[in-house]
Image: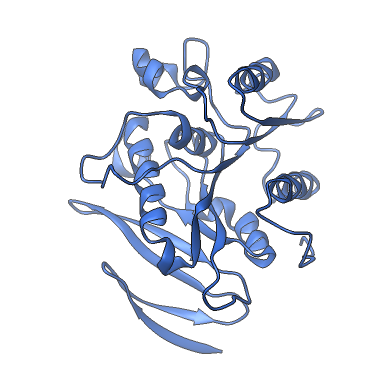
Length: 280
C-alpha cells in the first residue's frame, strides 16, 4: 500500500493507493461551509487518455443525506472504467438552506468537474449526472433548469451533463408533486418536468411501480415529453418496488438497476462490454 500527498488549489490531503485511487477536493466554500467532491478512478488508467465521468448526487429530500449514498454504484462504475464523483451539497438539516441552494451547488460542481476535466483525466463532453430521489432531481435540473446559478461560478462553463441516470427522481415539483410546499410558485423555474426542452440529454429513468413519491404516470409523462422534443428517455419500471428500491440494501434491485445503467451507458458509447466486473 502506498500513501501519496496531493495539493489542489484549495485543499491539502492524503490518499491511499491500493486497488482503487480516491481523491478529495474542495469545490466550493461559502463563509464557514466547505463542500467537497470525492473522486474514484478506474483501477488502471492509460496516460493521456480521457475517460467518461459520472457525477452522483445523494438523495434525502434536500434535507439530509451524504455522499456515501452512491458509493456502491460509484465503486462499480470506476471498476468499469468511468471516473466517478461523489458530491457534497447543502441541505436543510446541516446548513439550514432551501432546495434552491442545493441546486446551486449541483450546478457548481458540474462546472467544477468540466473546468478541471484535464486534471481528472475526464472527457468534458462525456460527463454524466446521476442521482436518486432529490439527488435525481438535482441531476435532471443541472440539465434542464437555466436559473439558480451561483453568482461566484464561471457562468461561461456549462453545467449541463451529456447524459442522465435518474433513480426514482422527484422531477415534478409542481402542485401535487414532491416538494411544492417548500418551493411554491418557484416550481415553474425549478421543476425538471416543467422545463424539458429541445436538446435535453439522453436519460435513463428507473422507477418502482409502488413508489409513493413518484407516480408511474409522472414518469410516463416525462418520457412522452422528452420524446416530443426529440430526446431519448428509457423508462424502466420495477413491479411492486417502493421508493428507494435501488439502494444497496435491496441487493436484487441494486444489481438490476446497476446493470440497466451499464447497458444504457454502453448504448451511448460511454462503456464497452469490458472489463467484466462482479457486482457484490
